[in-house]
Length: 330
Image (tube, rainbow, N blue to C red; front, side, top):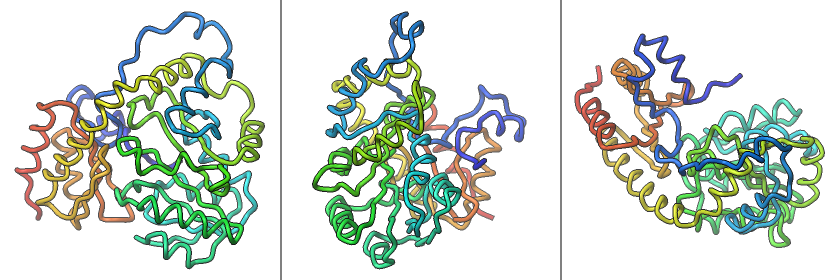
């Protein structure tokens, strides 16, 4: 089992700091989540049904009807490789580690392209190209026009472009989701998540956008009732709340810029709005120094990266600023 951010209980025990005393910046989840209302009793009492309006709400929000709700995008990430013909997968790395692990388990061969952009991935001439946009963990972005062109080039040679857009909601104009599985890009597959932008990670709701044949086979493989009734209701309501979305986007973008500015004296920083990633040779030392003060960040073993989520209020911002200002590399 791979490690992820958000393991606060583990950190609490390791550093002997009570749970309530932590500032958890180890995930990229919106610290001001969509406000979940009281839910109708029926969604708890009845089995989930697919005509409850969730699919329609998702199609309107994402701009594409070629979708399948899944139990968090993680469920689709694990299952998709089993539905595809085994071949070589070009992974633009570093990348969310669950992706390459799932493809490798399904019998595919991996080709890691370190710190590469799409043109280099296309020149690798592999059938599948896999990337995150914005990238997790580096926050690098692939321009939409280049990604659309990459999907077209792959289509001409029978290939597929698989894109994880878990963090793209603050900038929907950059998204490829409206094209996935359409006549314009039938070989484009996109993952989306409600966990990050909406701050509803615990609901475990996500979507995969792809050609109808892939969606049908995945639906059959998953079986019925993959998402609980309450989670479906929460997701439907959140996707329909355009007023909240319009307010959240500029607020998150501004917070991401603030975080980038706060971290910039320590090294190279890139922002994906919901998180910022610092590149520094002192990533391990800084991670430990912050953790000793009850501030949890996400450290990556293979790269000198430290990922910071957004503080949730001004007290937390000041706490982080003070800790960073006091830290001196050895």
